[in-house]
Amino acid sequence: MDKLKKVLSGQDGNDDLNVLQSANEASTLGWGTRVKGFLACFVAGVLCSLLGTCLLWVPNRGLTLFAVFYSFGNIASLFSTMFLMGPLKQLKRMCDKSRALATGIMITCLVLTFCAAFWWKNKGLALLFCILQFLAFTWYSLSYIPFARDAIIKLFSACFK
Image 1: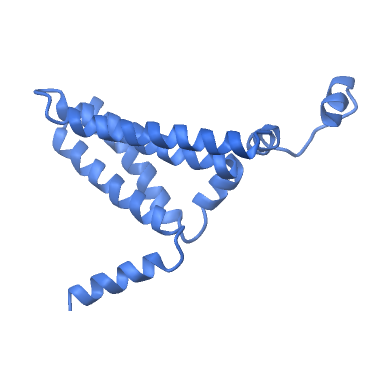
Image 2: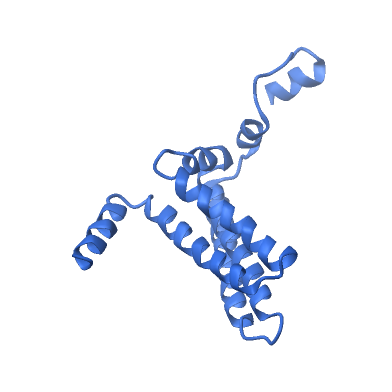
């Protein structure tokens, strides 16, 4: 409230806060509201992904609908965690050294899925990018579980010896 008074009275000069920091400070959601927002966004993401899978079998447009709904489901699921930790902290964690590659691949595949579905109209590429989205999102999610990535790597290396 003090910041608002300073800004409105003209006392506050140029603040070094960027847009994300301002949004993070402005979020005054209580813990219960954050959990409800997380659950709503996560459930919406899962439902979009499931709906996309069901639409896969629609003649002619099925693969395009699948790619779009599956991608929106991934976006909603990713945004759901912003309710729990806030947008700034989420973006910082997404760009951590341990997650940066998975984040980059995931976002690139999201964009390429939309390009393949709408501009290139190539259903095979759209499906490939959805698979890559799934793998990148899984690898990204595993980074939040201690030692999960190491366990997966050891499992695969043991299977292919």
